[in-house]
Length: 121
Length: 106
Image 1 (tube, rainbow over the protein chains, first blue to last red):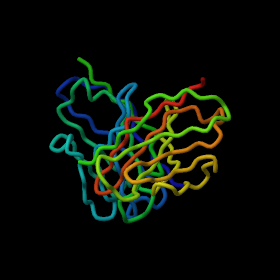
Image 2: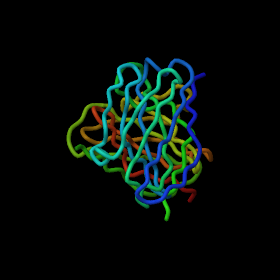
Image 3: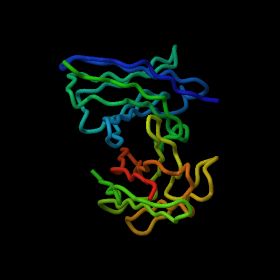
Image 4: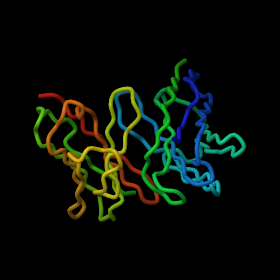
């Protein structure tokens, strides 16, 4: 059964950068797209961006353009999300999520467990 | 960008009730709408995709429908395990979530 396993919690100071990783098992890599979604404490879900694991194409939410970079490492089947210029309102749980269908933009049927990122001076 | 307006923000209901949650798109869209359930401290779970298709393993008391620009998630008979927060999602060239609906015990 496929899984997405994310890296551990992070505490960062304002202005710093954070990188969260998402290791995929099974046949995710080479076949599916992966999105990153965040959720601030007590708030709703916010989509940040998408990366294809089959051609490395990316799509970013306008809000995060220029501040977030999505990458993949096919040798370790790991996707990463880097967010720069951290502010206190970036404090959130960050999730990776896999497209439901292979090789097409789709909704998400597989999620990582989430990574808490806390931004505090 | 297309916005998804979800209502109500909170819904109080009893076990056995029929529950409807709505999402309205800011303009006409296709059927690329999904519904998720989220419980505290957990990742969201996919319930419905393409407006009305039930995800494998999801109980049949959940259903989805579309009328014009309005999408509805219906729980036909609310069960104790269904008290949670529900989100709609538009997925097309971008992905957009509704604001969420918390279903509480009445």
